[in-house]
Image 1 (spheres, rainbow, N blue to C red):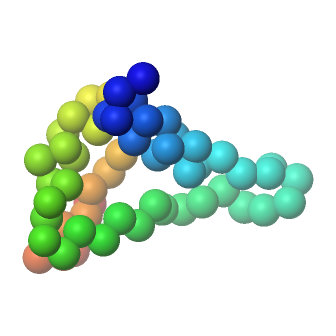
Image 2 (image 1 turned 90 degrees about the vertical axis):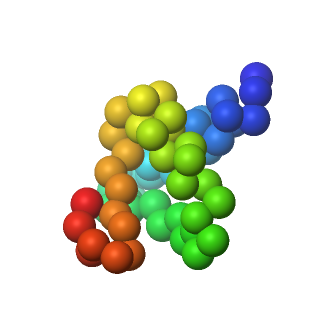
Length: 61
């Protein structure tokens, strides 16, 4: 498993929850002040298909 594969798996796992105990997560917040991970956003969306993106400067998904 590559580092990228582990990252995708961790993001997918972040959506897991106990349906009998809690409500589903609404978001995974990933602060990236220096935008070091920005280059991977497109690749992550291609791998998962369900990763919206919100930019601080636009405030839109």
